[in-house]
Amino acid sequence: MNSSGGEGAEIVYSLKNDSTLAEMALNNIGDAGQIKRKVYQRRLPENPNLDYYYILRETGNTEPILVEYGFIDTPRDAQKLKTNLNNYVEGVVKAIAEYTGYKYYPPGTSGGTDTTPNTYTVKKGDTLYKIANQFGLSVSELKGLNNLDNDTLQIGQILVLSDNNNDNIGTTTYIVKKNDTLYGIANQFKTTVDEIKRLNKLTGNTLYIGQELLIPSQNNNNNNDNDNDDENYDIYVVKKGDSLWLIANNYGISVDELVKTNNLSNLTLQIGDKLKVPVTGNSNNNNVYIVKSGDTLWSIARDNGLTVNELKELNNLNSNLLTLGQELIIKK
Image 1 (cartoon, rainbow, N blue to C red):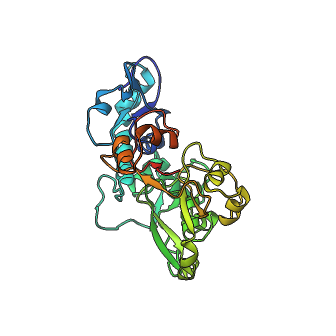
Image 2 (cartoon, rainbow, N blue to C red; image 1 turned 120 degrees about the horizontal axis):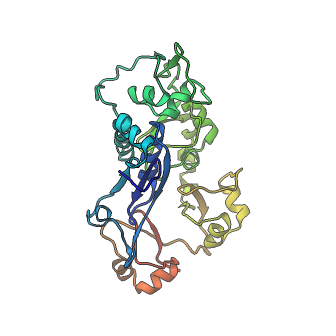
């Protein structure tokens, strides 16, 4: 519980992790009716390389989050915590399940048996979150199935809970992984974001780890024909601070070439987007190392014939902190 007279939920996440899990959990708490404040990190004043909170700093090789569901000294929050705390907590459980790649089953449902009915009739007191949670759906999935553009429900309204009219012939199933984006998946399977959204009845661009997506399989029929072409490309994952110009410059190509190679109609990049980049003799980014558990700057530098300072200069690092999956340039 929080204090000091605010209102709403907020989540603190560790310096060694990104904000994905914290944001998923906070969004679910918001879907359950609580005000969403923020997700953030807090550093120890005497050592900014360390987390402020013991629960984040002293829990070893884990991915901890500190969830504050509301302000105990604010009357409206105190009342919400009395009546809705279980729903808020279940939202975090759902986020953890989906983040770690497991299918989420709400309390009272059978984990191995699909007994979900095809429709549901709205009753007094129902909300989209409550109905979605009851049948193992996300709010966005429920809205997509029913073409809803707002959260308003009417008593007696019939909601579709599953799409039995979806013909899986000509499709393949893809399980969403950490850092996936609709653009990256569409690019991987040589289809479009709009086609994936249409096929899966998605109304937004938010994805969840473990989510199953239908992908048009006809776009994969010629994959073998392109195997030799793929050998001439690197796959680059967009990081914070990247731009088309910066990526093109690192690979020694023009922005126009990068845009044409990826059939980009929108020049805005999102973290996690995957870009095909032509391999050229001028590429500055051919030798990249992916950070694994137990790695340190010292061990990576040692294994690649560099000093720690050289490795930090190559990657514009101003601290010694690393995150799992981080990409490091190890050769000029």
